[in-house]
Image 1 (tube, rainbow, N blue to C red):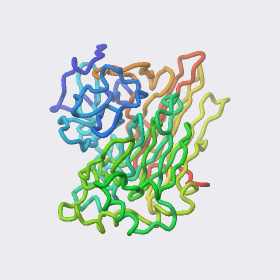
Image 2: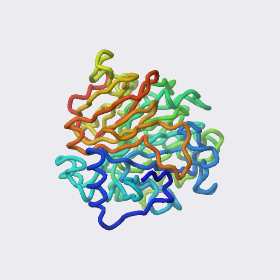
Image 3: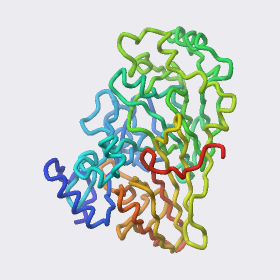
Length: 417
């Protein structure tokens, strides 16, 4: 049944297992997902994630523009005024759909692998396209210790800048990372004290780096960063915690509420506590670039074999591997079988072909309610057995980004080596 709009789908909350089993049987371990759009009230879309321009404010002007698309998400978006399923991905089969969160709950280890299921009882990571016209405020994502004070998880994340989504750098293709060496907690407090007195000056004490398509960055928790205006692929932990430390960005005011959104109520005006969320050692690392910049590293394949597979996101937080990602390029007319260590979610960013016989295609334009053929979730056993990719074009490469869960890829490279 060729259903092309989510408006035509029946949402399944009972017998999710039946839908999942049928989809897995047809897709040979591969689940097709529908686009998952997320607005941000403090952002303006960069228009590079293929969403139709008429749909950029599909949630309403009061909710802000859609400048994010989330992939393989079982994490709700922490947006004020959100719709009930905001941020959650759906599995689609024929004329039915079910939340990926519910499918994973039904399949358990069969979906995400025994180790991840035993420890987390869910798919604990997700990725997104972040696509803003200008920069974001200098902000951080809390670690587990701080996030648990408000009943949430901490969030490490990684960046990769796909060339296919970055023909235009937009207003500010630079990112502030961390703070200049020698910065003290008192310096941060002074910036917070100036919140309602004009620009608080937090980026006066922060170095910026020019962003380069085809490369990326690793961002641990408690590290300040002000993402620039390149469209970014962001594998990350399944949490939406953050604290904005910059009060004025791109001539737009950032309210205090976005600084203390995930701060305990009793501490929301405690400047010493808020400034203390910043990991000074990590933020002022004189070798920050060397210890956080990511270049692609060949993981497998060759031109002779018809495909090239690169590590694009890697790194550890105090020895723990949160999430990793790869970029697979299948050359024109080629067919390959790719084996991985565990479950993953993928998005096709260029070309057309098949995945285990199903259509795999990167669209040119997407309407808000469209069902596409560019996003899939590959369950654990299918990933390990090997997924067959075929590029049906004679001239254009098929390029796919895929991310993996925690501790799935012990063979991933170390940053700087």
